[in-house]
Amino acid sequence: MRDADPALPPRRGLRRRLLRRRLLLLLLPVLPLLLLGAGFVRFLSLAAAWPETPERPTDGIAVLTGGAERVETGLRLLREGRGRVLLVSGVHPRVTLGDLARLAALPPETLADRVTLGRAATTTRGNATEIAAWARSEHLASLRIVTAGYHMPRALLELRRALPEVALLPYPMLPAPLREAGAAGRLHTWSLLGREYLKYLAVRAGVTGPASRPLDARS
Image 1: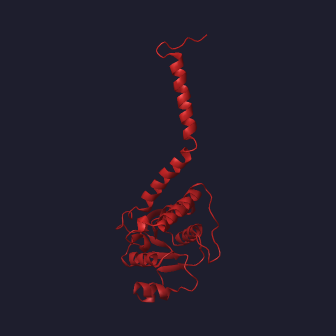
Image 2 (image 1 turned 45 degrees about the vertical axis):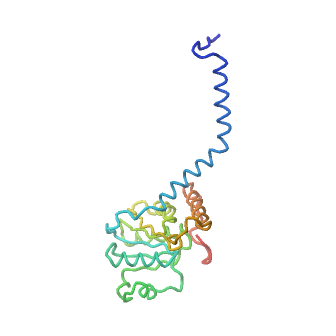
């Protein structure tokens, strides 16, 4: 028969074990929510990050469409010499190079051999596939990625899987609606961030959608 620990009365030791077991049982249902909340805080820090080494030039620039500001930013970076070629991924079928030239206030001929319009992608995974094919065809070793900050974590996950051999430098943007006064107190803002966080988790878990969807779908 095993001797009891003389430094700890048997009843007190039993009570402590029971207390720890009860606390564990109480925490088990809450633990997934705590982990989800901690992950969301981490996601917000990634979404709010500033561009990495914004002055460093890269071989190319890739813009994931979803707002005019993203395209304008990509064209500005190209004009400033931050990359030698630019891909705008997920362009609407009716958008032309002339439209982008007017947006950048540049003659179309100055963009003709430097800008590619990718029209196949309608999802983030599709963007990654389109960007990867273009980067390999252009023999690029580094890419600056332009998209909204809240979209950047998911976009980088998809891109790193599709294009592991290329160095990716994120250039996240804060969309105009999120720059408005009071945006942090709006339900729409948190709904947007919450949906994007769940999509990000799905990609991390390896659950991704198709590379393309009907043109009226949303990624």
